[in-house]
Length: 177
Image (cartoon, rainbow, N blue to C red; front, side, top):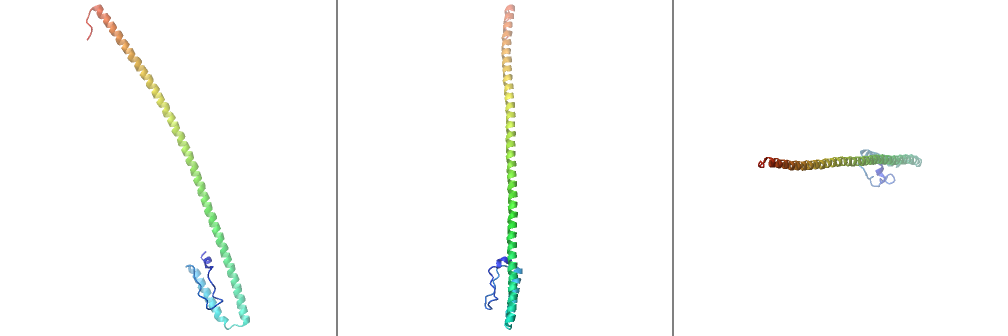
């Protein structure tokens, strides 16, 4: 990827007075490669001064082949970069999909737990309501039994008083105090 950031580098091979190549990255390997190419171009320019036309055609042919190799290398690097980016995106998409599936699974589990808790809560409420109704029924029965026993006691006291009064009148004894 660092090599691909050199789109804007201008070659100084065509003109000896061209400004130096700007370095757009701090990648040491790229810097070394650019500097090596600059030295190669300067050496070629120096040797071209004394060359014949035929020698210049040979150098031009060699430079064209070199240029074709560089274009091929650049295309391969761009292709590798695009492929790498696509693979990275596919990997990230896979991770996101996995996380979304996990989230969906957790949400389903949460929903299941909520339903289960509501069911348990309803069951406990029903159980407690039944026990409360049972206690209320038992309380009502006990209150009725207490009322009957109280009435029975009142009746027995009344009968006892009546019997005591009858006994006193037959014995002429004063009533108890």
